[in-house]
Structure formats: C-alpha cells, structure tokens
Length: 523
Image 1 (cartoon, one colour):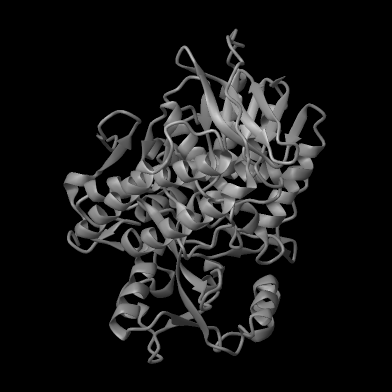
Image 2: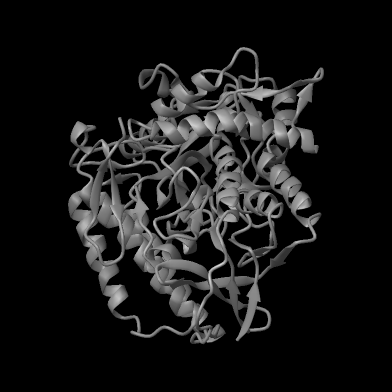
C-alpha cells in the first residue's frame, strides 16, 4: 500500500477545504483529497452570496445580533464574534487577492436576505457567487507548488494512533489502488449531508462522509438534529429540486399559496424575509392546509430587466425548465439544504481528537445555533478554514507505527445495492425526519435504520458497503438526536412538542460507544 507524506491533509474541496489548503500551504506541503472533481461541492452551487459587514451603514455588531436571532438561542457567542469580525477581514483579503464581487458605480452591490437587518450580501456574477468564489480560490490553490490534489479519491478511514489522528486511508477510484496519507494534521472539509433526503438542493456527493468518518474515529458530534430546509426550491414532479436563491426574495419576490394569497405577511414582520426556519415551516403548513405539493414564488410585480440581469443564471435555468421567472408563477416547495450541526470543534476547528480538525458545513463550531443565518456559510468556510490550517501547522510530526491496513475494493456490482438502500433511506428520512417530526415516526425510523444496519456484514471491505454503513449511521444519529430534543427550535420542529423550551437551550453531543450528553450554552 502506497504511503504518501504531507504536512497537512485536507479532505474535501469546497470553499472550506480550498481556503484551508491555501493558508496551510504557507507552512508546508498539503494534500487535497476529494471523491469527485475539485470543483464539485455545495459551495460551488451557492447562489446567494457571502455575508459581510463591509458598508459604512453596517457593523460586525449588527451582523452578530442578526446571527444570534436566527440561531434561536443556540449560537455560542465566541465563535459568532470571530465569524463577524474576522469575516470582514477575510472578505477584504479576497478582494485584495483579486476576487471580483459585483459592483455598480465603483461601489459593491450589497444584497438583502432573510434575517439580515442590513444589506450586507456580496455577490459575484449576479447569482453565481459560490461558483465564482470557489473557482477563484481554486486558482489560488493551483498556483501553490506545494499543494497536491487527489481527485476521484475517497477516504475510507481516519488513522488514529495513541489517541491522535495521524492521517487517512483512501481508495483511488480510477486505479483502484489504496493509498495511505500521513501528516501532522488532517482537516475534514467534506461539506454537508442533505443528499440523505429524497428532496434536496445538494449535489450527489453531499452524503455526510466526513461526519461518518469522524464519528467512527471517536470524534464528538453536536446538534445533529438541526437540518435547514431551504424554503424556495423549484418543484418539478419526479425531478431534483432546483434552488431559487433567497436573494430573489431579498429583491422583493412574493410567496403565494395556491389560492393566490400572500401568506407570510400574517406570519412575521419581515414577511418573505423572515429567517429560513420560519419561512420553510410556514410553507409546509400552507401545503398541508391546502393539500398541495407546492406553493408559488411570484416576481411579476418587479422590474423584469433588473431581475434578468441580477439573476441571469437562475433565469436561464428556469427557462430550460419552461418558466419565465419575470412573468410566470414559479412552483416551489422546501428542500433539505444545509447541515447546521456536525463535528464538534473548538474555536480553531480542532476536534476532541488531537490532530483532527473540521471546518465548513461538516463542522459544528457553535456559529449556526439551531438555524443558519443566510449567507453565513461561505463566510464560515473562509474564517474557520484559515483558523484550522494555522493551528494544524503548529503541530509537530508524530512518529507513526503500522501502515499495514486492510485494503478496500470498489466493486461496481455492489453499486446498485447501495443506490437501492440509499433511496430507501432517503424516502424514510423525508417522510419521518423532515421539516416536521413526531415522536412515534422518529421511533419507527430508528427501528427501520437499525434493521438496515443489522444486515451489513461485520467486516466491511468494499466501498459501496462502507457507504451504506455510513449513511445508515448518520441517519440514526440525526433521528436519535431529534427524538431526544423534545421541543421545536430552529431547523427542528416537533409536532408533539410545538413550543421552544428553555430546558433545551443546550447542545446534544453524540460520540461512538457513549451515551449522548447535554451541554448548556455558555453564558
């Protein structure tokens, strides 16, 4: 088995991974391992933009307050302070490097999104910010001679020796070879997991591998019950959800029920620009009440030329689906979008396992609370990607022992079995652990997931079998945590516990072979 030595090992190539790799390259050699191409990630598909208090009318304090309000009492203040203050610096640093955010009359065009009290969302290419940012960071990474990328390579296990993470084992899909990566530190930046639901805005790669790898290695996970459902994803029967950015509502789009009523004005003072959890839940309730699989987004009352320019990519994509976003009612329904919880880290992205770090959507830094504030995700990637890489660089090289690990195969004959189980689980999660949950259905889901887990062989040596094990484990963790949280808060809504409870102003932390623990919010 080939052994490759680097100072820092980055697993994942979204904005968090690219940011971590770029900063880590200042301190030594870096490997980026990604199971697809370097530019396939949730970051790449992010339309809305990146939040940053850069205007004279705004301040990090206002951004801090908005983040806390959206987080429903579960944000930790220290990481939020870091996010809003260092976030401004990271954005200005990017601009200095040459990142081109949209401007008008030499001023940055700042958008407004749900939960924000000020216009503070920078965007690039109108509605292609994620793509522009990711491609820009990819260019910076590719300029660094000491960064080596490994595409179409999947990590199969993290290597833990004497309680510390010393690297990772992986399989190269092209050659079929198993590789061992050794380094001072490993940074998980594998993104989200919303592809475990049948209706989602996420790419096929977003199946929570990083969380499963960390959990198996003994890392703590926090707030796994909080999944954010994006309110406005295009509804097309039997087709993948297509995200219609929150920025569209920021520019004045209305949400109408199937009777043509604008219902959000009665729900929240910010109407369509209320925080995402409130909007998604309100849509769900309307769909239940009117027995319809979708509602509508309307831009008919807005300036058509301005909309076409501001949302050129969304406009073009919707045209391909047969809709003109300036004149047609757009059928929408919520879709699983963002993992709010994840691998528990400190303020520098380090987990409870020395040498193992996490940043971006895969991590639970304490920033997001129970519900992420729109456009804070790309900012978190930049801020904590840099912090993780800098702390990782300070570690000394550990002398490691064996490299004699059992190899993994990737038998294409097992792929169909994986897809069948994955689709079965996705339907189960959407039905029982979706926007609205209830104790009996959660208990049923746990029993079904445990039944699937029992059918797996004791020793797993094929990658497709490993994926079944990982997805089953992740879904169990989410469902068990959702059953424990007997309240409704943020991205977790219980039909049988409809109110927010002060007793649950705490994080639920899970760890392999340990009972879940409850950690109160820091005062």
